[in-house]
Structures are given as C-alpha cells and as structure tokens.
Image (cartoon, rainbow, N blue to C red; front, side, top):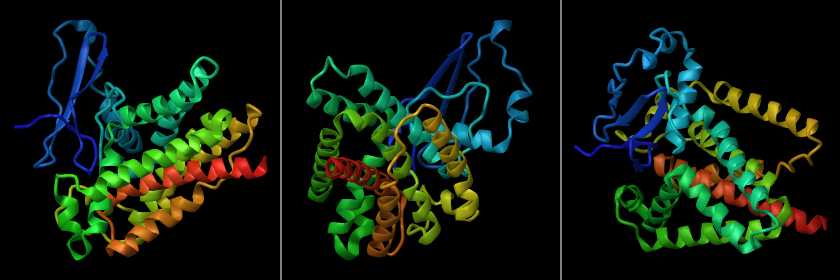
Length: 305
C-alpha cells in the first residue's frame, strides 16, 4: 500500500505530516483508494507526552475543519491534539491562502535590498510551490489537458500523464506570475497576501454554481457537505474583516480589490467550458485567479504611476 497524505482532491501525495510536541509524533495519512483517515497511536510511553484525552472531543467542529484545511492545503506541520476533519475544509481555504501569501510576503520583505529582484521573484515562486506541495498547480495542468481534449476532457484530466497543454499552462502561469511580481517590485509583499486569499475564494464560487462532474471523484465530498455559498463564505468574510482592520491599524495601503474579478470570472468560465467542475478545475481556479489577481495589481500600480 502506498502511504502518504492525500492533501487534496487533485491526487497530490506527500510524506506523512509530523508534528513533534514533547516527544509526541502525530502522523496522519490517508489511503488513496478508500479515503479512510488513519491516525496511528505513536505517542511514547513517557508520562510527559501523554496527550489530553478530552481536547479532541471538546474542540468545536469548525476547529477540526480548520485543522483539516491546514493539513489538506499546505505542507505546514500538522496540529497536535486536534483530529482533523475534511468535510467542510474549502471554507477555510482563503485563510490558508492568507498564511501562505503572508509567508511569501515575509520572505520578500526579508530579502529586499540584498537579493536581486529576479532572484526574489524566482524564490518567491519556489516558496509557494513548496508550501502547497504543488497541489493546485497539478490541477491546473490537468485541466489544461482536459480543455485541449474536447469531448474527452474528463478522460484526459484523469490521466496521470502530463500532456502538451499541461506543460504550456505551467509555463504560462509561472511566466505571468513572474511578470506580475516584477511589475509590483516593492509592493509585492502585500499583493502576494491578497492574491493568495482571492485565489482560494474561486473554488467556493465553483462549488456553489456548478455540479460536480465525476460520480466517484475524490473531491466530491466538497459538494456533499456544501451548505450554501452564504454559510461557506462566513469564515472568509470574518478573516477579510479582521485582516482589513489590521491593515488600517498598521497604516498599510488598502488592497485594491482587483482580485475579486478573477475569483468570480475564472470558475464561471471553467464551469461553462467543462459543464461543471472537478477537483482538477478547483485547483485550476485557484492558480489562475491568484495569477490574474497579481497581474491586475501590477498593471494597476503601473497605470497609477
């Protein structure tokens, strides 16, 4: 049996997440076939690393979903003592986006002045791939192959081999994102944060407006536990409000809001082309919305200058 963490509906495998707290090693993995979550008891016999038995039971459901989103959408260490739940994790995607974009922005700010701009761009792009495990990019490549296959789109998207359209989509995404960051330069840190947020809003639009295309697809659980766009947007709107208040308090320039445009249009366009959405197109929505949000921010900055 192949072991690892299925971190997304897009079939990207990672090694088991490991979190070390007082000698305790929490290992979480998910079998690719059955989708059954296995969390082996690997705690040592030392009394100091015995975990509180009541904490997982007392944790509210939304916190378990947030812990699941943390594991699902990033390679960041798993949370100890909270058993992740994966039923409604999509609603926390924008929050995970803020974390990933924030780490990219922090890296950009940290290296400003002693790294050439081109090196900053390349390393920021590489950091995004490392933090996400490339799971959304994998979906974008598969979706490009599907769009190029016409009526055999779903068959092409399910094929694990990468086609010519997928390679072209990968190159285009990276080039467009690099061009946007070169335009943004000193404004890139804040733009990275908000682009990652808006990019992960796009799948929520896709899940709300279009049916799921595969009868037994691994991303079908998103639609099975969907409670309407209003309910699923609540965490994102709360995070947005708190982030804006922090922005005002820090006296940073307010975001331009251009990222909302691709967050709405990209999933709508893909859904109409494919007749619905799958896990691959959810990932493609993230990548293209995030890239276009960066591009629009860069173009807006240039036009304002």
